[in-house]
Image: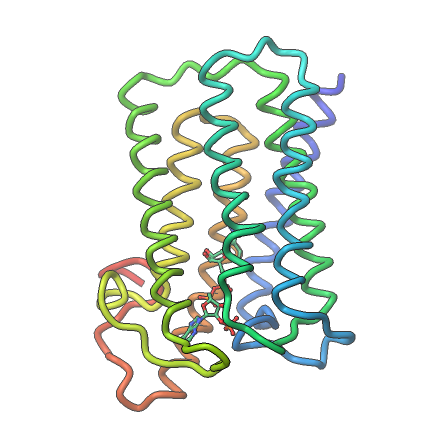
Length: 248
Ligand code: NDP
């Protein structure tokens, strides 16, 4: 019975991601360079990142460890990959940002907390209560490789972006080198590769929903960033695509 409700919840969650994707072609996510006080009360940017991302590893862990399914070594590998990503995203990344005195709308933090609570629950509950799906070993290895490559691309790109600023600086420069020569948002491209790899290691409704949400959040944001660079910098390299090398 619980299983049926859970499946309905995830179908609804995927439908909500598709609606969000379509809406984001009309509304820019108002944080970072697109931040706006039109969305109500503002909070500190760094603090916002920590409080909005921390619910994900906490909720994921709770439901993973409460799960009834005997945990195999593959369960723990997937658990570890998720946690490595989120310890970086919720603690290390925010502490490294150079966004002194910058603010984000409280509404954005609340929306992200909601996303992370549901996504952490969906993925933690599923992994904790189900056997690992029986993917061919070649697919599991490919998924693992994609996760590692995606994690590397995501972190190296974020590292380049974070180092564009000197201490106290909060402005923007054109990022150069690495995949920035091909696309505007390699950090987002890396994130999409990561969760696609995670999904290939254990293909099921929860991990698929995470890939759909990652695409829904990051493709429109990459498009907005690309447009913003073109408007802001007359010398912005014209050959760069938005998020997928050679494609878009
Ligand atoms: P951005 O690329 O907008 O910014 C990353 C950081 O670099 C920010 O601190 C930003 O400062 C700074 N920065 C960006 N561009 C420049 C520039 N040209 N010059 C100087 N500094 C710059 O990424 P997001 O903040 O949107 O996302 C951060 C991470 O979170 C990414 O790795 C992303 O993949 C991940 N993420 C994942 C989501 C998912 O659904 N899985 C959703 C959203 C993000 P500032 O904030 O001042 O602009």
